[in-house]
Image 1 (cartoon, rainbow, N blue to C red):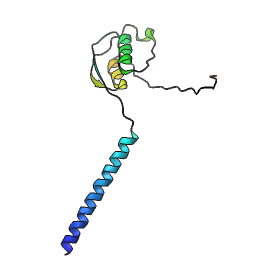
Image 2: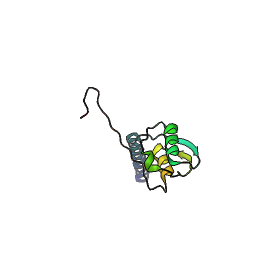
Image 3: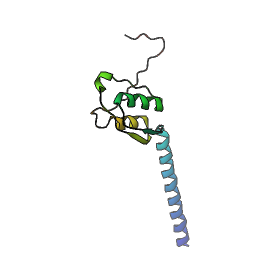
Image 4: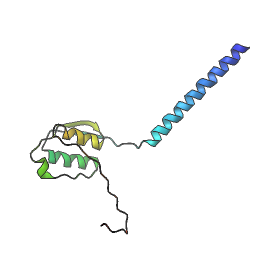
Length: 112
């Protein structure tokens, strides 16, 4: 009789452990925002054009000084990427890295 009881107890522990793992995975998935991925097939081109093209395709705003990127050439960007990954790929070897900055101004407040 003890064997049957310990078998049920072991099954209960396994089930509880599985449910706990599923709960933790669900919470982790919920806590992390989903990052949009984009299919890009962009050849190597002038860096300023590559940045503008990626911005259009991923629906993001990109600011850069054209005189800084000058005549630099981007790497080809081909595959599935987030917007930041695509920018990073295009910038590889150009000694630049993308930086995400968001500025939010509430309506009705003056900027000083």
